[in-house]
Image (cartoon, rainbow, N blue to C red; front, top):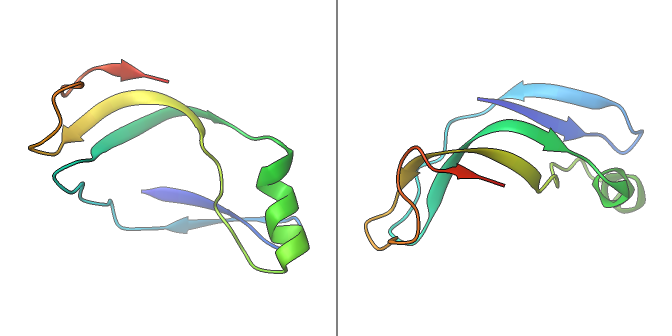
Length: 78
């Protein structure tokens, strides 16, 4: 998968990352669209550490853990 990492100088580096495997209580979402807000650039700028802090997403449930009953594969989520 591709991951956008905001650098402390506010540039963005696109990196390849492995697709995570959800544990029994998690879901894996295939992100279709994402947004950003001020905390997404303030955190790396102030902490002087690169970060992927984006959490405003919408997508489709790709995989569910065995204890998850609220969602199923193919559900649209935001």
